[in-house]
Image 1 (spheres, rainbow, N blue to C red):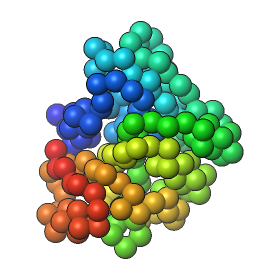
Image 2 (cartoon, rainbow, N blue to C red):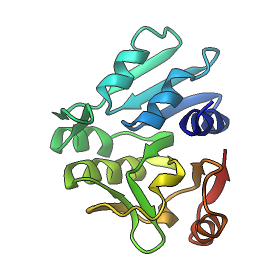
Image 3 (cartoon, rainbow, N blue to C red):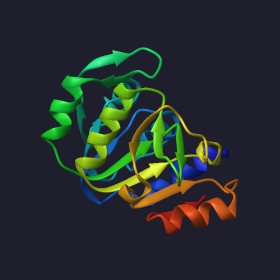
Amino acid sequence: MGAKERIAEAALAEVPEDGAILIDAGTTTGLLAQILPTDRELTVVTNSLAIASALSSWTNLTLMMVGGRLQRHSLAAVDEWSLRVLWNIYVDVAFVGTMGLSVARGLTTSDEALATVKRAMIACARRTVLLADHTKIDNNQPAAFGELADLDIVITDSGVDPIAAKEIATAGPQVIAA
């Protein structure tokens, strides 16, 4: 099992028995979506066309797709339409991905359209769980979307530098190395 698969497996412990979750677009979050428990009645909100398609036939889920302009490279909905939905919903847990995180810059991604949607995802959730393999740590991208203190948990892989993990935990979130 690879690092991203281990991260997704560890994230299952944060999926509530019932309620609403948000799953951000991304490869690791997509792996989580594929292994969601089939014995729970969940509402799943996503901005990912790929995740929505993968979950569309699951009868135990209520699936809500966030609309907006589709970014072709990420297959994620972004921009104002996405924000309108996210400003008007509440989820128990948001499972969010990132392209970079650091103590100095916080959470970062490739462009402002994605960053704006990710900010709204964090704001609409009671708890936020970041799924990020160790290559994302200290990898700063141009568009910031949050601080480490905005997160409840960071789930990464065993390749994480122990010093970096401790620095991240000191900034706020619990760090789990899967």
